[in-house]
Length: 591
Image 1: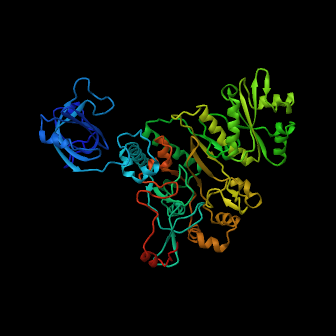
Image 2: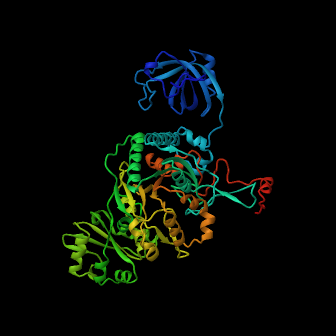
Image 3: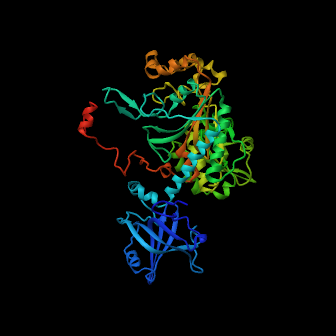
């Protein structure tokens, strides 16, 4: 019972067992129906809906006041709980067997006509309008339910970490700008003119310092900030489940985090996951799926046919190989029956959006392979194709030939597009995979300089350390991402705890002694005081909530989100500040 000085019950609480009891409810006018002399009001609060009955035979003045009620007015009612008339129960409501026979009505506040329907959630509403009136959007129900689910999620996380001897520690929001892959949000200092704080992209360095501090097991549900281009699953400010542990290797971290995810799914949606999550190397993920976050709910993985293509007479394939590219194929089971020539033409237009110049195809039947390019393949090569692709009658094969990056990107999007078209994806199917052994370095496309794939504190595999100076792009990291249905839930790594190795990594990134001291001096100093082997991981809390709620955007699981242009339409920010504030910060005002 949620009894307060205002109410004895909530609008979702009354049952037939309460019949005859005197009850006081508070809430919003959800729907109103006039049936002759009787007025029926659906009263809504965040717990549910209760039907109210206003009868002039019970109280004429209360009934007269009820005639003035409008949508979304806030009211308080007192009356007797009674069973609904025979055949009038509403099985769709938890309170559907009863109604409240109102004796007294108080109008707590009136409401303007809402800019969109609150009671009809199926009504299409422009997202900008929803975000402008987010407080009304939450009232509609689905966002509210997502926030309740998110609350269950954070509660489950805290229970888990408490059980496993973790300590929750808050780290600073105003901190130092350090390179972490995206632009920092910076905050000017009024006290130290010309100097700036940065909002944290993650608590990365602080959680490592906590391990040096001897804390051993840390976690935080941390606010993070990144000034980057946005999309459906990104926000400029977001929440991480941040974790770090001492005296562990990657298997220790992955095993415990796997247990956390299983407990989350059990607590939040009642799904019991008993199997161990599969693992896949980064190299295999890119080779077979073209992505380091593969969706494994369906097949359609890629098969490299470079060796077969080399021996063919098909110029497009041979030139791609000669220019250092690759040829990959996707087998679509029964695709010869389910996919038309028009569909294939549409697929060709689709992949052109990702830079792929063309898409070849073949069909396989009892008579063999058929298409306009089969003539370029000898009978022997056709047999090799059939074997390499494990073809069965009525299968369709799609081929991509170009530089490997373009082939992987285009086929990655195409396989998901085809899976959606052929309804191969089940919404209630959850396929987890750990992607491991990421590269430690990659080349920046613009500068052609080495950069860290994750961050410069990630430890390399022990056996790859000798390659740092000779062949840095072959060095693999002790890094791991957990992927669910093609969405990265989070990732982490074992960190560098040896100060000499950390210095070597910085130097390979061409950071000068001065740059190292300026950006990481305090951290390098800390590494000199006995650093334990340690590692951790950060999950995207918003992203997990989005997947648990089957939402299409993380904006639907955040109470007050920003738009894709990083603006808040409700409070109208970012906004200008006063000349006095700028003067205090010694910042000139320009337009």
